[in-house]
Length: 589
Image (cartoon, rainbow, N blue to C red):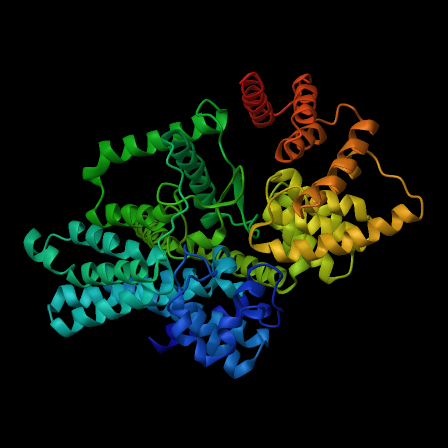
């Protein structure tokens, strides 16, 4: 037993130890740790339990922030120790998998090999090698503890064990929302077990019921109740089909994980008639039909493993909440598989041992050959995990690898742009911000980033065009300061005789309109349309400002000019038409 435990620990360090020196990264690391004011003082502990994880009303993970606070108080912003704690948690989880599977199968060998696969498999890299993966690792620790304790509670029916189940399950919920699927996994296990009557089985679920009720009350009490979801049934169906397509890739990754990369995503399927959508539906329909026809030939435990895998992936199935990396892309990240891999690994171990036993009976090949295959597969997984760990230790390499697979991923393009900013390569930052905007045109953060990069290169008017495109939302004060600085440079350029094109004057006009200088805004818009009479945005803004100033003839003129063009947006045409009609009615009255 000790040798098996030691093997899991040592191989865990070998697989992922190379990522320990990795610095904090430009994405979630800075939000969660480096620039997170909440973790800087222990006086903020009450605040941690009162607000969302990203300071919003969606995610509630106070224990994760509490773990970051403890590390910050002990080690400051030394990323080595944060990475080390992630690795410790992963190895602890692997030992718990060893224990859990041994109990589930009544077989220590199956438990050991499953735990070994769990600790070295490269599909775990994203959760282990990224510090914000702490939410996954910490919640998994409590989930596995709770599951092991539940098995004991189910067997011995001691109330104090049930209390421990309640405590560990509740702690898991305070780390990550997906902990909430554990009761359904437990229910699937109870359905597969035939040793107790149905009524006695349900009595074992009280710790989970109390835990979920308390958790929901806590979130309701603090107002953390937002769920990102679309209510349109058609979008839900297409999102689910896109998710099902990703699961096919996931199943391949368990056996052949050669294209692992950061922030994996899939383009959202826009129609059920797409070839990929039809192929996905056919694949899973065939799978369901086979299971239904031959389910009596499967042992109940195998059916439980299938249900366990399905249940673990439900939170990311797009049915519970919309999970994406940007408009038009569904997130299919590798870290979604952290716990979902356990039933798959159990099935892989059982399948190999069955093949080994069949071969021993029929002597098809030498047993040494099968051992060689198994050993070669484990070495392949270990080397791939080491490779992923090396990639993760260098943020530029990690993001470059992801972009090689998914150049249209807006979030990764934005991450590379921010990394270029920190490397003081502003032209490269501009290139990647433009790529992010091309993939997701309506994200204000990307326009703000591009505008800042342009201004840093002295392209002031182009930068202003990016700042005034959208409402900056929570970044309003930052954008206003940047706009003010940008306009100071633009005024200086005008004094020096520099000229701007139609879009440049349009941006200047929008800026003046935003700060209430309507006369200067009108002058800028008029210069815009004098340079390009087809500039519909300038005519629209002129009409709005003239109308606000009750200059009805000028407003009517601007709206009529706008409506004369064909390439007018639906909003502009509808707005101009209704307001022009209203002005005409007032004039008649």
